[in-house]
Structure formats: C-alpha cells, structure tokens
Amino acid sequence: MYVPFKYDLGGRVGDTSRALEVLTELCGGVEVDHAVARSWNLSYLANHPAVLRCPLSGGTVEWAGAEWNYERTLRLYLDLGVLSIDYGYEVRGGKANILAFYDGLVGWKNSDYLPYLRQFGVTFDGLAIGAVPSSAVPTQDLHAGLVSTLRAGLQPYITPRPELYVFHDFRICFIDRGSALDDRTVQCLLWLTTSTAVDHAVEGVARDEYGPVEILSTGWSTVLRTKSTAAGPEITTTLSLLNLIHAQWFLCQAWTSIYDKDFVDEDGDVAVRFGPHELTRSQLLLARDLTEVGNLDLMLKDPNLLRAARTFERCFGVMEHRTVAERRLRLLENHSRALSQFVNERDLRRLQILFSISAAGTVAALIPALAVAQGALLLTFLTLATAAVLWLGFAINLAAVLRRFGARRNRRPRRLLGRR
Image (cartoon, rainbow, N blue to C red; front, side):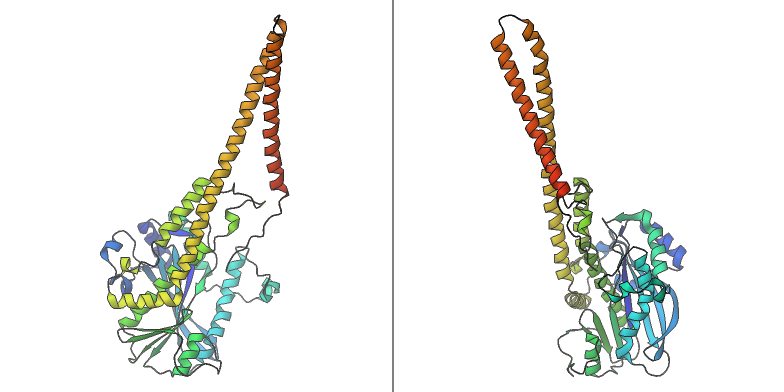
C-alpha cells in the first residue's frame, strides 16, 4: 500500500538553493525525483525547479489484525508550493485483511491530523469529534511536526498566497505484484468498501497501462497490477506520476478554499481589508499557478507517460477542479472591479464635499465687503443665494455619505463558509 499526504506550504518556493539547505538540514540526503525528471522536457526544467525528495525514518503499526512496516519519503514540489509525505506499507509476515486497511489507516492518521488542525483553531461543529474533549483523542506526532518545521524554515523564501490551506489530502494506492488479487477484491479496493454488492468485474473505473503495469483507478483509490513480483522502475515512475497529478489537484483545492472572509469586511460590505493591489496580486498568483495544472505536454515528453498521466488527470478530476479555481479567479476580477468603482465613487463624493466647503467659504468671505459697499444690494443677494446653494449641496453630499455609512453598519453580516 502506498499513501501520499499533501500539505500546503502557503505559496511557491522561489529560492531552490535555500530550499535545498533547509531540507538537507532537516532531513539529511536530498535528491531529485529522477523517476519523473527523466521524462520531463528540459525546456521546462530550465525554468522550473525539479521535484525534490528525501527518505524519512520508518516504523511499525498494528491494525486490521496485522502488523505493518512502513517507510516514508518526503517530496517537495517547489513550484506548486506543495509538500508530500508518502507512506509505503507492507504487511509483516502472514496475510492481512487489506479490505480493512483503509479504516485502520484513517483512525491512525487522525491521531496526528486532529491535534495538528487544533493548532490552527479548526473545529468540527457538525461532527461527533467536535464534542470529544481534546484529552480523550489519542495523539501522536507522525509527520505534523515535520510539516510545521519545514514550512517555518521555508517561510522566508515563499511567495505567499492570500491564505494557507491548513488541511491535508491523501490518496491510497494498492500495489498488486504478481496479480494475486481477484477482480472482486480489486473492485472493493477501488471503491474502498467491503460490500457484497460490488460486481465481480472491474467496471466503472479508469483503466490504462504503463509498460507492464496495469492502472485501475477511481481517483480516490488506485490499484496497480503487474504480473511480475518485482517492483520494477515502471511502478516507481507510476507512483511519482500519481503524486504529481495529486499535487496539481491539491493546488487547485488550496485556491478554491481561500475563504470569502479574506475579501469582505466584517459587515459583509466591499473589502477594505484587501485593496486593489492585493486583489490584483491574488489574480496574478492564481493565474500563474493554474498554468502548472492541465498542461502536461509542457512538462512531459514520454507519450506512454503522458497517456497514463491523462488517465490520472481524469480520475482525479483535475480539470474540473481547475475550472472551479478559474471561477474563483473570475470572482476576484469582478470583485476587484466593484471595489474600484466603490473607491472612485467615494473619492468623488469627498471631492464634491471639499469643493462645496471651499466654494462656500470663499463666497461667504465676500459678504462683509459687499455689505459695506453702497448700492450693492442685488449683488449681495446673489452672493448670499450662491452661498446658500453651495452649502445646500454640501449638506446633500454629506447626508448621502452618512446614510451609506449607516446602512453598512446596520447590514446583517453574511455567514462566511469554507471548504474542507
């Protein structure tokens, strides 16, 4: 079993050499992920950093009635601003109920994940776990501490997005060496269920091949089957490819989960917290990040690998997720225009008020001189009428500004919603 966990770094890392230093100091030996780099266009790698990887310490865990050894690898996608902690599990002696593997995995990883989320003030009011006291939830530091430490070390070299996406996302991949699993078991693994209603034929899933490796995937779960009992470079390459597509999906997830509260004030009115420059910067960052998603020909040159990559792309729903992120970009553009119009209207009102005050003051200063002059009654009357009109205009403009201000204060705040 192979399980990659994706975390957001908060933005892309611009300084590769500094990232290497931080990663080397934290994890030891660092290398380029050659399984992917060998099939990438040099024109792409000349302007984009390669994927970095380094081994982490492993361990043993017991669940689903069996003992499992696991190895861990850290992958760093500098240009996407995504960190991946990859677990490889193998049963230790005998056989195990692999259909129960998923439930055991979720309970085990949550003992690390839930305490990590509490550090960011995340609560789950709609779930039972929200009512469980913190002391009653088992805790352990599987990799959350490492993620936080690495993120803090890379912080000075990150071009930040508007908000850090604090949640992780994981996918599960079962590796069937020697094609030992029957079709029904494979179908159950693909749908992560033990239901007897699962059809015996492998249907309703994407299917492809990369060399001797048969790829079956629903996106959330993948099975790699090969007749050979050896791992082989094809499996390693396929797993690296799955990781890359997962990282792209996660990048879209991070952007679509930037909450509305970042772009509206506490009264639900047009943002003053983020000005036009900040919104324009967000637009540029999102547009630049999306160029990395869905453009596999820009990266890869191996036709077999490209075909397998597009299979994963369809299974993960990357392009649909990218469309959601693009809608977010259009929302930012519309919001930026609305904000610009609001600022222009506000400034125009202020100029009108200042002009009224200035003109009224100038005219009022002439009144004493006119009162002293003889035979200037008509001129005095006209001057007083002009001053009255100017002061009336000032009062009308001021009343409009105060009314709009009061309406914003009395408006009921909108509820701000976020996604997992």
